[in-house]
Amino acid sequence: MVSRVIPVDTFDLVIFGGTGDLARRKILPGLFRRFLSGQMTAESRIIGAARSDMDDGGYRQMIREAIAEFGGAEKSDTTGLDAFIDRLHYVPIDATGDGGWKALSDLMRADVVRAFYFSVAPSLFGALAERLHLHGIADAHSRIVVEKPFGRDLASARALNETLAAYFKEGQIYRIDHYLGKETVQNLMAVRFGNVLFEPLWNNHYVDHIQITVAETVGVGGRGSYYDKSGAMRDMVQNHLMQLLCLIAMEPPSRFEADAVRDEKLKVIRALQPIAAHHIVRGQYDAEGDDPSYRADAENPRSFTESFIAMKCEIANWRWAGVPFYLRTGKKMKARSSEIAVVFQDLGHTIFEGDVARHRNILSIRLQPNEGIDLQVTIKEPGPGGMRLVDVPLDLTFADALGEDGEDVPDAYERLIMDVIRGNQTLFMRGDEVEAAWSWTDPLIEGWEARSDVPKLYEPGSSGPEDALMLMHRDGRRWREIKA
Ligand code: NAD
Image (cartoon, rainbow, N blue to C red):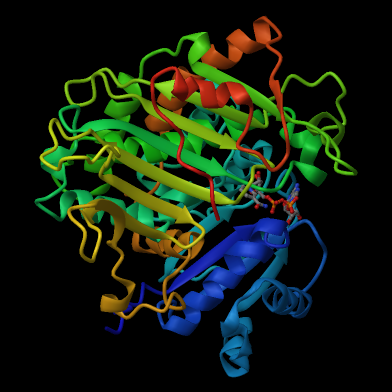
């Protein structure tokens, strides 16, 4: 089956921070793929705007090199690449001063979608919003895209929301969380709400528990001193893991439409219970051989910041009462692997004599690597010799049936930027969601900080501290293996 690509409206996309790491590694290579697919119209333009002094030619060369380094197989299409590079412009700009704003204003076209990607430090968001407004560059139909981190606590997130709200309506603000742009995350909604099979089982009568794991193999390396002010809770849980939890746990929205979906996600966050201290395990990776410890990477020998966290959460509502949600995320884990697993309850009774193994249905949604969804089902082991049961995965991604070879599937950033141009906010966080998430995490973080809570050390390349295993063992459950 050939996937259908519907071109978006012609746009001028300004990337503030267009020379930065994120722009070069993700945003521009992603836009190039959308250009090749025909989704980005040939008349659309991308305007890099950053501090460095250079002209269009210099920027085009920089992005050519970025695509050569970070692009995929598509970069061999040199004709396509030349045509894409022609769509690039550059304006040197000072976010906090007056330099460059007139030139940017002169460059913008009146009759196309205007979008502004704030790929800069959050401390510049306010200055950018204000100047876009002052120089008349943004109008009531323009959109802005803001990167994480969106605040570091409730107070700073609220202040950021207020700053942006002074110049833009909520309907113009796209707070990006690239986890929501992943194909399988959206497929999760298709599986849940597009089939009769799953939704009747999606509750505390049939689900035993849910696990969400986001494991990385890298340490904090070169950005250790930045990370040390944040930690796994702020960097991963408050945004990515909570967003995944919301999609899994939310009630069916009445329509697949931005505010209907976001209203339901918000209700989940508000129903999250405060977590008891013994339901959270914080960890820091230790040194191993020549590899430095977390504290060495963070250049802070007395750091209490966590590079790993595991927690048991409860959602106090009719659907989920009594069903634990176990979340964990960490650096320097044994494999790079992100997965949501819905573990269904045991059968009440087995008719198969001698079958002592515990067979369970598990719906597993893999975000990386190898995005996909499978359902573990129990069948008879083939061959003679009686009724022996075996668990096998039923692949629900049906890659073969859909004929997708993976090349055509846009990555999260590409998809989300195209949603911005289309004006579809469904997969972006609303201001009140972000604030509600901080309201839940703030008391936990404040508690650790107040009592100087010391994270447990864990071996690099492991599954985290021993206590994290105990968190589930105490409940008679086990984490799923972290495997690539
Ligand atoms: P970076 O340091 O590589 O680039 C920063 C960019 O901002 C540069 O283009 C620089 O010229 C520009 N800039 C800085 N000060 C400016 C000023 N006063 N006026 C105009 N331009 C100015 O940063 P990055 O890694 O690309 O990250 C950008 C944003 O995205 C940050 O908020 C970061 O937290 C967020 N983010 C980055 C990643 C990533 O993978 N790099 C992932 C998620 C979120």
